[in-house]
Length: 382
Image 1 (cartoon, rainbow, N blue to C red):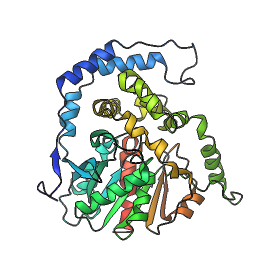
Image 2: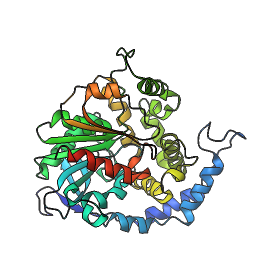
Image 3: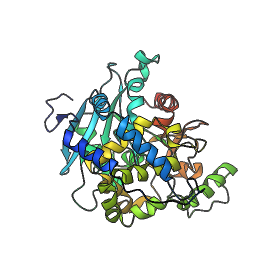
Image 4: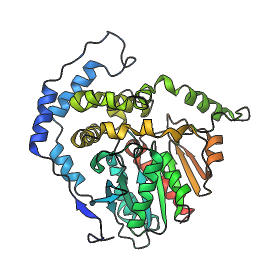
């Protein structure tokens, strides 16, 4: 691909100062709720915690520096099936590099992958083997970030995302490529293997959500799978956000589009719930500035509502999934509840790793471990 590829335009983030001034004014005028004493995080995000984080956002966080750093990565815009699609495309200096599309989840953005870009595209410069190099494509799925809102019902589901990404990889001229993803990406990347089998050489997932097939006879599951199955079935106790977003995403959006503090609280609560369970606070699991940059992407693009529609429109998530036969690697990090027996039934699992460091947002929490596992898996399928 070149800058002159038909239908693809270079893109740079250029935030109007008026939008940043409005954000600061809203943060300064936040109407804070009360809270119960001595309940910590059991009722949600503590007011005192969020006040401190908002204070940091207002006075110490530097969006302009973050914006400049984001713009160091080649970004592009195209249109697929009538939907604007934003993506990063970072080609490796190694001519034999394998194209790899990386699909992020919710409530994150392409910011999730920033720390893995250099080592994956240029391993030679990062002490690695140049034979492990990748050309990276990191799309913002429809409804996310600079892809902008979806425009019709049904475009915000994981199967549709896979169709768009397959079209994008074809547009870029990649006849053979790998796919990687966690969270939402753990649905989209295997789906790419199902719909674009002849072009996908391998799929690597972290935190694979094995929610299809839960009606199977589980009596033969080993002890580890029984534990994960119990955790998976009990996830609804901490997954209230998903219940709301799968039923009333538009109603939720009014408050979160109007209040940056409300948006921050909603996203921070997910980081607290889903990141490394041994970490007490979100910024102990992920970098505080990276967390805020991710929230800024949602705020500046106004895509909280459209991105969360995937929970309402991806009704296929509970259905049993067809095994594509594409070689698949699974990486589990602390807190992940992937049931191996289900994963192996629905995927051609040829690689399995478990780590004692990191968490659900692996590319942000333990990028070195994810990089190593991606390299190890794709050595088997290049």
